[in-house]
Every structure is written in C-alpha cells, then in structure tokens.
Length: 344
Image (cartoon, rainbow, N blue to C red; front, side, top):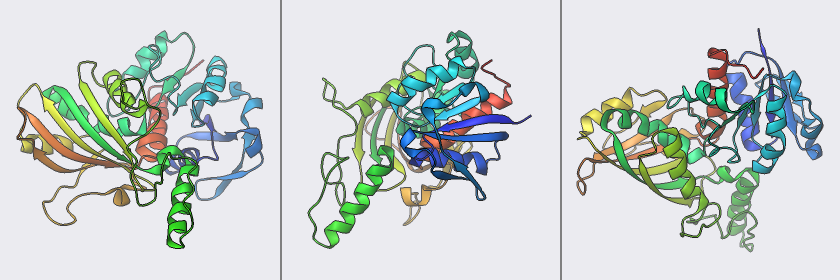
C-alpha cells in the first residue's frame, strides 16, 4: 500500500529538494501534495523527472487525507500548521527549529538515533511531530556517532563554513547578484545578510544571544546533546561563506578513551552515511563543490591533535540541502514506513 504525502514549502529550495529526493529514492507514495502559501498557489513544481505538481494553499489543506507531511516552510508556519496536521493523524517531519528542543518531540538523524522515533512518539500526546535537526548539526553527528560509540567523546570544538543556501533561496540570489554586481562595479546591496557576502565571510549566523554566541552556535551544542549524548560538551563558531551549496566543518574532538588515527579512519570508513576521502596530496580531500548533489557526509584530513590527550581533527563536508534537510527528512519518513509507525 502506498502513502499519501504532503510537502509543505514546496516552492522553496529545500521543499523542491524534498520532492526530488522522494522521487529519486522511490518513496512508496501513491499521492504527493505540493503545499505552500496562498501567494504560491497554482505554481507548478517538479516531482522527479516527469511529474509536475500544482501547488495548493497550505491554509486550506485537509491533512486528514495524508499519512506523512514533510515541512520546510519556517518556524512560524510550522507552529501554525504542524500541530493541526498531527491532530488530523498525519505524521509531521518538520525541518524548522520550532519543535527541536521540545522534550516530547524526537530530534532524529536516522544513522544516529533511529530508536528515538518510536519511544518519543509514544509519549508526545498525539502531536505526531518529529523534528529534523539543524543542517550543520546533522552532518556533524553522523560523523561523531561511530567515534562516540568507540571512544566516548567528551568535548567537540567545531568551526563551520556554511553555504548561503542554508538561509534559503533569497540568500542564494543575494550572493549571485552581489557577485555579478561587483564585476560591473555596481554598489553592493544587502538584504538577507548583515554585510556583503560576495568575496567575503560573515562570522554571524542567526541572532546573537546574551553570552555572545549566536543561536546557530547554541543549536549545534544543544541539538548534539539531545541527539547523541547530553554529556558531550560542544563549542561552535559558525561562519557564512560565499558558497551556494555545501556546509564544511573543521572538527576537533577529545575523547575519554585513547584514539588512534588508524582506528578513527577505519570506523568512519565503515560508518553508515559516511565516505572517507583522505589522501595527503593535492586534491586528496572533499570540498563543498564536490559534495553538492551527493547524499553522503564526507570526511577528509583525519589527523591526531598533538595539543590534547586523546585528541583528533578532521574535515567534514556535506550538501546542506540534502543530508542537512531534505534527505534526512525523507530518511525519517522511510524509517516510519519500515517500522510501520502510523499517526492514527
């Protein structure tokens, strides 16, 4: 039996990627609904290579006719519509930050904590909501999971180099327009970003908190603790870079048990969702350009950290629109199907 699936935010960058990923992975859907705001109603979006879907207005949609809804339309939209979808018996997989830190909402990366789906859904009082982590967190915990299982990670220091697509299609347009304008000596226009992003880097993602960290940096710490282990201490510095697609991370870990480079390399090479490309030569590593359009979390430049006991360093790259958002959401939906979990 096939499933009735809704994609909310179907006209956005992640929503379009969700539709593409559902088709590519042959998700068992009998019917797919493309939903967005009323101003996008009537637009057409692609589902796979052949099918075209007409966008329907979200505010009038009856979720009782769907089994699973993938939300990628921002926190305010999720807060307004995800609960009513869940109450209608639809299982909601939400890509926003609206429900991630709710105690009774599972925050899931299928390669890392798949069992949290069943246990958390049993106690979330019919909300039927599952949260998708922040894109920078998703790729990080996929890499940390096998190492934590083997060596018990106690501390992580991570610097991120995040693509503009993490801020949506308007942000991608801003990078394109600024880059084009600089070449013809036009004045730089900033709307999405606080400063020029073309040929620049901005050490500021999301709002500033009272302690000087940004909310993006707080998310990485809080979400890693919820997904992987609350005992892991993590500090992040998140930077926006002039790349369209693909988040990169420089990761420094300390563990409670001794690690060797060889063991780390072997564990990561055999980990689900991870591909190790690490040759100490020119071009022997992965950049966001190579990772764009791919599903894997790529690990390169694995090496011992000589400044701390039980320390290791590596480079981590992934397509933020896929593993960081669309792919992870579809993988959660696949997990629901495999375990025969229903919202009704």
